[in-house]
Image (cartoon, rainbow, N blue to C red; front, side, top):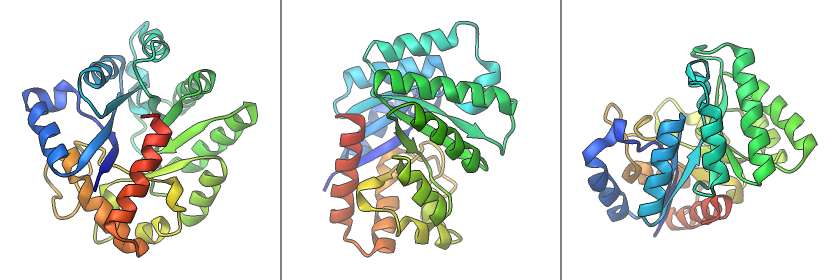
Length: 256
């Protein structure tokens, strides 16, 4: 059985010298592939470097919506250059976050639009963060898809069943993270059970969102098996069937 952690953050600031052990534990747990996500230009470049030297690793480059107000002069140009270099498999993490409000909403929209247009220009998937903002994010995706093809990934999806249907109609894949395993997350598990199997991704969002039974600890890619097992059970599928499908989905989306 193979699993693909479709969204994790493994930059040196968070994992440092432990990274070889973290990757070793992932592979020992059957996590043979993973996508390392950038949130600024520096960690996007680190993700691309990691992907270049580690088999089964691909990278994404972008500026997180919570960080756009702190972006340095020339940082967007560094992201564009990295994406255009062909060293990453996706654009992002981008999106909208109305929960933290660490950046003005119009500035977040501007940067989200930049990422969407870059992904469209280079025919790459785009990894999208939404927190208390899914309605506005879906509206911007609808505008973007009217311009041309787009390959969106709504990571750590927490929307309603109706929002899931709308997102899928817009061509999205939906990633589910550790929060779907929480005891209070029965409504989210019910939503996940309605998503077509060919649109599902599974992720850790490491080092955040550790699944049950590991809440309170630092998350890492090896733990994606707990989320996969929970989702398979909620959907009435075997873990093997679920793992094979979500791994195939992620490989297709990220082209690896």
